[in-house]
Image (spheres, rainbow, N blue to C red):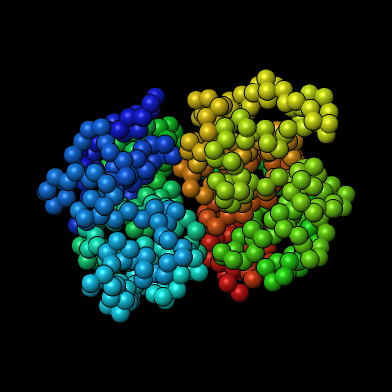
Length: 492
């Protein structure tokens, strides 16, 4: 790719970007949210037409006027949100648009044999006749890879491929990538997880503000320098340190149960403390915090805040009590993407900004609401050109900050972060970590769910490990623990 440029109204998404990928090479494409990575990959995949630039594959110029043209040229893009038809089987998704047919009839037997062969090359066991909606995330990802192999792809783009995978599934994916590169397929790997880049990348290219600022071998790109290239400034620490000033218990959970997902879970979070819930996907962490927030009803158990027993039957009850939840899936559960930034900020705070009696149908004081948001936009460094923009147009990190702003305005005393940095860049991660530390320093109780073990070890004062709905162990001094210590408790 040479001189790729793309401009949208008021934004230069790409400014003369060059990218080279060799046969059998893994190129890690890094950068903050909004740096231009997704736009560049959409240009390569034919989903976005550039204003300028040339793309060549094996020396031949390619127009890339559509995703179909890119596919024909040998480019396959596996997006973070899979492009599968849920009701169709794995086999049907693999050959969608490429059906093997005679006289208008699909040769299903031939397709099935080829699907089995393609899926076997992914290293993941996938029943070819099962609808994709019934497959696990790892199996759906294998179907996407098989789709790429079915068109004899020369270049495969993987966008945040491990965002929802377990550690074991991540290792299987790495094995698949190694096999693809042995076959001469070039892989562009887009991720915010630095450990993964260090594990599999041959070269690393960094974008910032729509421009390529560095491209070197992975060995020549130390982690600290990589972070500073991405954010464009010096960062002292990836996980900001703070002085501990831990007080009395604030959130106390006793005997929380819901079916087999959450079984007799008890713990407490003290004032000024960050407690992490760790464990493998499906261990019951998200299910536990949903019960605390009232998103699901508990079969048994009690929740106390500052010694007062709460009756939480809905999120409304939790919010009124001073408990908030930054959901794992901010796009579908934490925000209304089509609505403005300001509207999302005001949703749980309508009573606060109402003139007159809110219960009696009072009017919202939009000026006061706007002024309050402006304060958070400055303190949280929310990069929104205008509060009236649809929140769905913001980067992942800025979306997360909008969610945090609305809960800070609600004066929450217990803040539950479920996968707080999933899908956001390293610079925004450091800012989120700093905000979590600031909240703890103000005496708030912070409960964090995270699948990123370095994040857990770097941020938590205590770690509670879950397995099959139960708490199987506690690490009271994360500074002296390792990822292996967490995993040993998570797989009991």
